[in-house]
Image 1 (cartoon, rainbow, N blue to C red):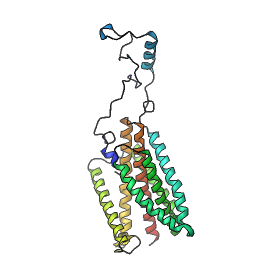
Image 2 (cartoon, helix red, strand yellow):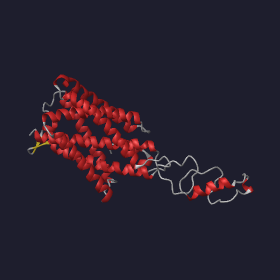
Image 3 (cartoon, one colour):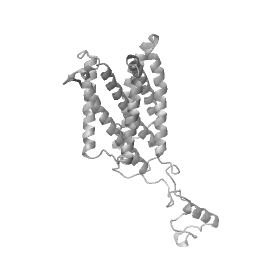
Length: 305
C-alpha cells in the first residue's frame, strides 16, 4: 500500500476497536444531556440518589431522543466528502507550485532554476512522504509542505518532458484519470478487493520495484549506466525493460488504489475523527502521483524508440 499509515492504524486496517465516544450519546448518536438515562422518560427515581428532572429538561431529552440519527458530520467523524475536499486541496497546491516550476524549467533564462526545483522537490517529496507515511497522527502542515515539494518536482519534470515530447503530459494525465476512474468503478460496483495473499504479494512486489528504482538511480548517478533511462533502456527480446517494468508498476499502482479505497471506506465506517481525512487524502495523492509518473515514463520510452 502506498500509505503505510493505513496498514498500521487499527481503525484503518480493521484489526482493532474504535475509540469509544468521549461522552454519552443517545441511541441516535446525539450527545446526552446531564441526567439522561436510556429508556428513562420520567423523573429520576430517588433510589438513584439523583435530583428529579425538570419538565423542561425532560422535554429536551424526549426531543433529542426522537431526533433523526446523527451523521458523521454531526459527530465530528471523517466522511468521504472530507477526504475528497482535502485531496482536491493537496492537488491544488501541487498544480499551483507545479505551474511555477514548469515555467522555470522551460525557459532558457531560468532553466537552471527549473532543474534545481526538480532535484530539491524530488528529495523533499521523498523525505516528507516517508515522514507523513509513518506518523501516527496526520499533520496537515507537513502534508501540504509535501505537496509543495511534489509540485516543484512534477512541474519541472512535466515541463521538460512536454518540451521534448509535445503532448505527452496531456496523454499521461488522461491515462491516469482513466485508470483512477476504472479502479473506482470496479471497486464500487464490481466489489473488487485486494486482500489476503494477493495483498501480501503486492506489497512484496512494490518493495522489489522500489529496490530496482534505487539501484537504477545509483547506477545512473555514478555513471555505470550511461543510457538516459538507466537499466530501463536495456532490451529484453527487443522490448525495452522500462516498458515491462512500467506496465508492472502501473498494475501495482492500480491495485494500490483499490487498497486505498478500502482503507478509506473502513476509516469512515469506523467513525475516525475528521482529522484522519488528511491521511486518506495523502494516501490517494501519493498513489495517483506514482501512477502519473509511470505513465509519463512509459510514453517517453515509447516515443524515444
